[in-house]
Length: 137
Image 1: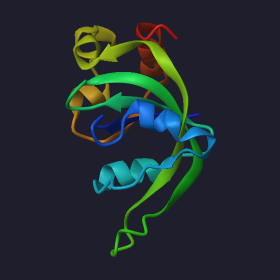
Image 2 (image 1 turned 90 degrees about the vertical axis):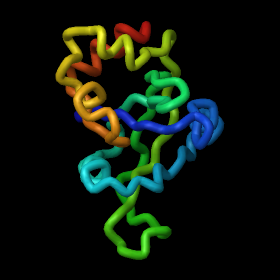
Image 3 (image 1 turned 45 degrees about the vertical axis):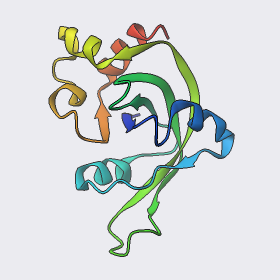
Image 4 (image 1 turned 45 degrees about the horizontal axis):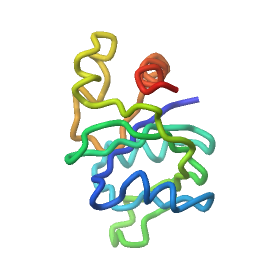
C-alpha cells in the first residue's frame, strides 16, 4: 500500500480543522499541479499519508487516510483536476519539522527534501517508517 504527504497552510486548512471534519473527512480540493493531481489519481481507499503544515510551521503533524478515491473537482471548468477525500487518523506525538527531515541522512531522497513545493507527494515505505519514528508513533 502506498503512502503520501499532503501539504496545507495552517491558516487555510489546519490539522485541527482536519480532525474537526470527523469521519466524513474533507475533499482535498484546489490542487492544480499536474504531478500532484496524478498522485491523487493513483491513490486507493485505505492508503495513509502525512498531514504537513507548510509555510508557517513546516512540519509533519498528523496522519490521514484516503476514504474516497479521486473525483473531479466541480470548481475546475477544464475537468482535468480533482481530489481524494481524507480523514484524520491520529496526530504525531512529536511534530517532525522540515529541518529534522533535511538533517536525517536516511531521508535525503525524500520528495519533501528534493521537491518541497509539490503539494501532494509520494512517501516510500522506508521514509514512512523513519518519519513515524521521528514523530513518536
